[in-house]
Amino acid sequence: MNSHKGVSLIIPVRNEAGNVIPLQNKIMSAFKLIEVDLEIIWVNDASSDLTFDELRSFDSELTTVITNRSCVGQSQSIYEGFKRSKFNIVAVIDGDGQNDPKDLIPMINLINNNGRVDFVQGKRLHRQDNFFTRIALSKVANWLTRRLLKIEIADLGCGSKVFRRAVIETIPLRGEMHRLYAAHAAVHKFHVVEMEVSHFPRLHGESKYGLSRIFKFFFDLFFVKFHFQIQSRPVYLFGKIAASFGFTGSIMISFSLLMKLTGMKSYVDASLVIGGLIMFALGVISLFQGLIADLIVRNTANRD
Image (cartoon, rainbow, N blue to C red; front, side, top):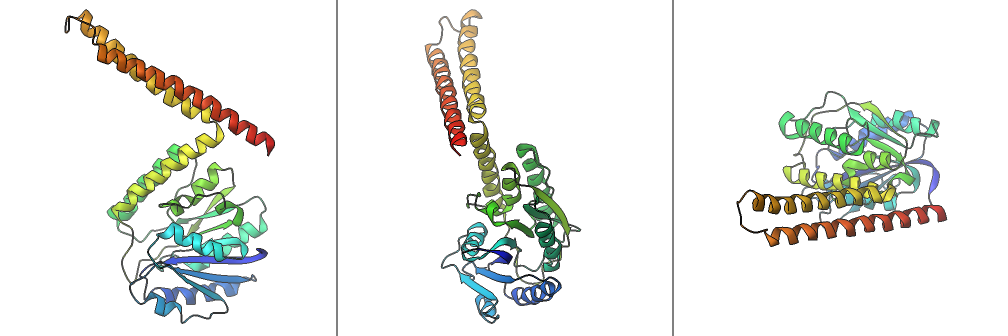
């Protein structure tokens, strides 16, 4: 049974020895400033250093430590913590010590005092990271996300965020989806606001962010884009696909006729014509799929 009072703070970590104890102390100090029930859920993502030894030294009455048997990634780790949480307000913070737990307090207060706000996303000021490997790539990812999803969120990658439980229940946990929580909430019409937070340099260990995560992020971004379009008006999405097939088919058939008329070939290239007709057929099929999907979505919405 989930309680309506209190905050569940989830902290995913992997190989963060040296960072977790100072962060725990900062959390304890920060939450003395607010009268709210608190549970702290550390999720150890199969760390190979001394992270678990440091985590198990914490007060067990307030803190829960979950250890994944194998490395499952940050999104799945957050979800594992979410399944063990008990409060309807959920906060997430990175375990590398670069986020300040004090910044969570005004974020929590905003959600508790404003019934319209569902999600508060942190926005890092004076980010303390390598410009080329972290900041520049992050700016590109944020810009592309804003363009594709038509949302205005400046810093999706910030690890500090607070949201209502209903928000994460709508999010498919996969890949790097934790970086798109706010975007996913926004396209599902939850009220998302940003709040400026501080950012510190990493003191111990190395960043787990790498080039391999970029591809996962973009895959998940396009997943959110098309998932949202299918849920809202699938006929538009399938209509674009049908138009693409139709355009390709027209080009193929026109090119075969052009080669015949200009003397490049003494005959109409049957392979291009057949390929064009196949493209037209695929376009018609896609259009009908869109119409059927649109009817299903509308009927489902009417039943709800």
